[in-house]
Amino acid sequence: MFATLTWTQVFLLAYLSFCLFIAVQSSRKYTDPRHFFSPANGINTWINVLALTSVTFAGWLFSGQLGQLFQSGLSFGGTAFSVILIPLVGTLVLKKQWLLGRQFKFMTSGDMFSAYFKNDVISIVAIGVMLLFAIPFLATLFSASGSLIAGVTDGAISRDAGMWTLSLVVIVYSITGGIDAVVKVAVVQALLFAGALVIIGIYALSAAGGFIPFGQGLAKLAATPNELMMTQGLGGGNYNSLFAVSGVIQWTGGLGRDVAVGGIWTAIMGLTTAVTFMGLQIAPHFSVLGFAARSPRAFAIHQVWGSAFCIGVLVFVFLPIISLGAHLLGADAVANSANIAIGNVLPEVSRGQQGVLVQYFIKAIGISYPWLAGLLAVAGIAAFQSAAAAYIVTSGTILAGCLFKTC
Picture: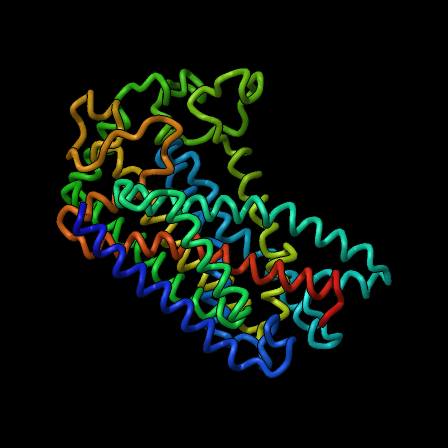
């Protein structure tokens, strides 16, 4: 653990120093206050592609998606089609917004709506929507960063100390470097979080013995009764819901009143959840990144290659390997008691605590490769910070541009 802690500190110091360096370099370019919110020549196309991809997916994939796949199984996997639905909305609106921004000098969606409706009340509404979402979302991301660093280091760095330190650095480089610094750092954050998921997926597959033992283990797991995860006759049989094909809908007394048989992730639940993600690219925050783009080409590249292809590979290949592999590597009490677990690499994960799964994988990797565990821990922190930094600087843009009319 000490070696992992040391390497984590080394990589974390290097990462945070890089963030602050980029912020200082970006701040020196500002010759006009507007450049803090939108670079003079716009955001470079490829930087924008990686930034848009990282801001949209990084934090959620590294924690929420992975944990839900472990707990609910492949029935939750249907929400992965959000990698297509999210950019579908961007396809319809982002380029049009960008063209309007170039024509009328809009920097936020509030500016655009105020001009269209000839009323500034809509700007106040946009600020309200932004704050209602951004404040609790930022708190969640900062808290997740602190929990990750505390879990990986076995409490050597406390959750509160990690959370406040990391949060302070994000705030400093966001308000110092502006949007230019945030999107440049997001490029590194995108590469870190994607690389980390690939490495953890390869480790999970390797620890399970390769593709053939991995597949055989999943077949045994699918045939193992689990009273908490069985469909109990729904769909024509009693199947392990980790692998069952979702039904269309399931009538219950309601969440908190009646337990959904085999889990809540029916086809309708998965579809409606994926549809809610579509709002990401029409949110006030995302519009700021769209208006600041140098060219609308970035939107098409992000939508096809960044989101649908690259993130699609992660959510359809590596995340299922990691989450289902965890059941075979010691994290599933039922698999352990049935003697079908391939290894005892991970501690058992109790129901409702699936968010710690990434921490357990990083710690397991740290036994043999402390330096790699340190790098993966920093990659997880980067995943949470990419969205946090973007929401800080875009919130500032909306407040300054729409409320105080300083731009």
